[in-house]
Image 1 (cartoon, rainbow, N blue to C red):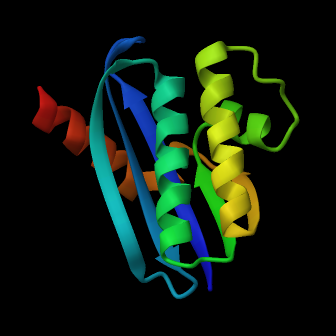
Image 2: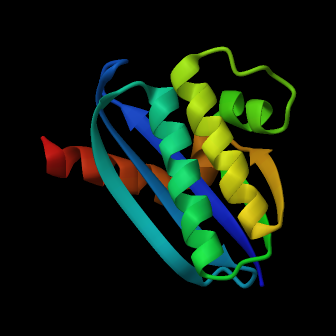
Length: 133
């Protein structure tokens, strides 16, 4: 099965109260899974990577074998593509975990988009942050 994984993470303050979310869509746009979760105090980038790790794990559970990851985090996308090095230790651990999870899926590509093109995941992040406060 082919699918798209929309991921987002955010923190109110950086670091601050943080949350992540993902939405997995089938090729026809049907939502197969979505999840938003507060993760306590973290940075925006840790939240972005947490969304990626959780979304990849769920995609593997759904037996997705070809996945396009769509994120408004250009940093994370470029790091996962190997364009930028991951210098931050916390992000390095998360990026390694994401790489392991991506291998379990199969073919994974990464696309950076503007926040406006990632509305549902962005909304789930804000809903999780609102619910946690």
